[in-house]
Length: 593
Image 1 (cartoon, rainbow, N blue to C red):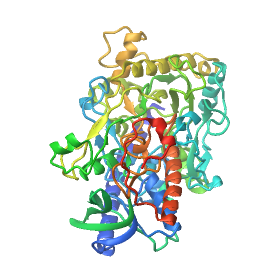
Image 2 (image 1 turned 90 degrees about the vertical axis):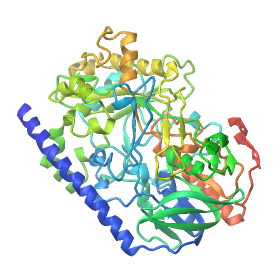
Image 3 (image 1 turned 90 degrees about the horizontal axis):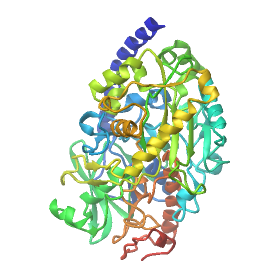
């Protein structure tokens, strides 16, 4: 078995190298194809211009075009190739030309096991945005996540008139069953938390159709009406204003600069990093910060504040004596490829997580409130690719990987990883310079509030209880007891050890949100305060994080925004100057003009 696994490591290394070459060639092909055959008339006029073709932008473009509006959808990235539809290949697209490859500033209290204490922040630079790079996990969240700001949320699935195909993951295993049996023994509820339960555990549901990833950009393809124009490989530099009214955008493509004009509105859907960056480049943001960069202020607003993210820890913390977890041998097995292409089933349909659940930590006294912890179970440890890909994707220090993770390469490891759902620590995004090609300064201030640290440790205590259940004992589940590098001088399995462990192995779940917060930057109709005809619709407007993976809430948000904008389109009421700034979230129940 060891020799077979070694052979698979070699094959995987070669395959990854060639696939990276393929991605670059594919990108260049589509880039020059776009350059040769797609022209743009400067100062073209549209009803709405949408910046960003991610989860929200794609839906808005489709809905508004279907309603009769003339739409320009502008995306900085390119188009996905067929391989983007194969779920198991997702990690290969990170740190490529299809990823913005953001990196945080060094963290004072976290990420100490990562290069320079900096976390990698992947974000999709491609049609479909991060819905092309995520784990496809569908979690609607807890009802109280949306109280009081989004009480009329609706299920965004195709069966309910929405854009998402959602299906149960067909790939189940003895491991999934054992985890759920263990959870049941600990007296936690089992069931569909998207329909039946507010909290509990379940086998994952995925945004998948016939074994293929279902990302939001797929609603744009086929029978596209002439009212929707999509410009790819186009970076928006700034929003154009007449006074405080948004009238268009300035963008570049193929080293040329263009303007596009919008009669009814500019909608920014560039994500929790891209949207605040664009607003600040355009003069919408904290006045003092803009003055320091010599950017003329259009609207003094707290853009970039309230940065939130779900944190995860505990990767590869469990070893199994029974070899039932998914391994690289399973993924490279020719039968797995045949099973996928012939039936749309098998290991290649995996989203990377097989069981998830939400629950309340010991710090959360109100059991009717939204849960503060999530568990995600990964059947393949990050050590199982022998450092070929995941080490780079996560920015793990070489010495740390070699000392802690590498010894697990020939063992069976899984991650039952706790996720902090509602962190007290809040960060910010700032501009590095007025140059739109410069990445912004991202400081999430991870674990700056000690309660976040203690809640993640409580999640680890849950994992310790889980592996002691009868079902997990049958698999030979044990805690990996090798001290994490940097924590060797602390007694293992003490509170102080786990504080050290979590502060070193602090990972993002790529759920960035809140930087154009509803109630502070935008109103309940998604209009930006102190401006007119300017809207923001994406994760940046979330006033608080949902209790789970955020793709489904963003899609629900976009559907609501589309309905509001269609009403504005029909009534001709988009040009409203918003003169007040609501600080109190509860005032969202009332109109502000």
